[in-house]
Image (tube, rainbow, N blue to C red; front, side):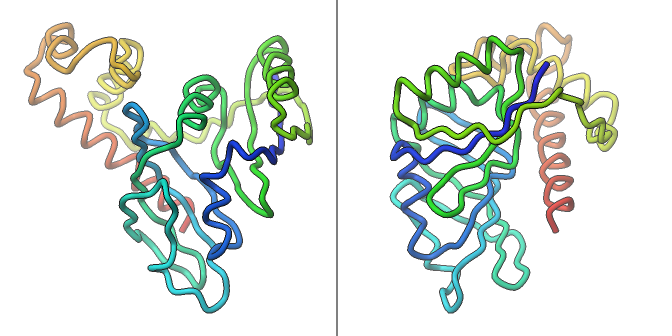
Length: 211
C-alpha cells in the first residue's frame, strides 16, 4: 500500500473557495455522514483578522455549530449540501482519502491511500478532468495504530464494525437498522443506541485531539 499526498486547484472545489472572503484556512477533520448530497462533518476554520464567527458561511452550508474556539480557530460541526461535482468526487474517492483535508490559498491538500493502480488511476482522472493536480509526495503507507477504538466498549466496537461491513453507512444503505439488528440478534432500538453512543465517543475523541 502507498500513501500519496496531493494538491488540487480545480474549480470543482468552489465549495471551498466560497469561504475565501472570511477564512484563511480550513480543515475537514472528519466526514461523519453523507446522504445524497447532504453532508455532516467536523471542520476547523481559521478566520481572517477582524471577521466575526457568524460570517463563516457559504452556499453549501445550512447549519454551523461552534464546538470549540481558540483565538481565530473555530472547530465546528457543519451540515449542508455538496454540489453535484463534489458529491460525485467524495463517493468515488472518499474511501481512499485521509483526514484532515486542508483548504488554503485556493488549493485543497490531502492524502490518499491505496495500491499503485488505484493512485495511478486517480492521477489519470485528475489530468483528464483538469483538476490542477500536483503530486507532493508518495511513500509506503504505515497505518498509525492510535488505539482510537479503545475508547469504545467491546459491544460498541463489535456493532460499529459489523455495521460498516454490512453496508449500514453506505449511501444508499445496503442494509437498514431493522435488518442489521435481526442479523446481530438484538432489538433495533438497542442497535441504534449503541451506534449513536459509539459515534458520540468517536466525535469527542477527535475533538479532543484538535483542541
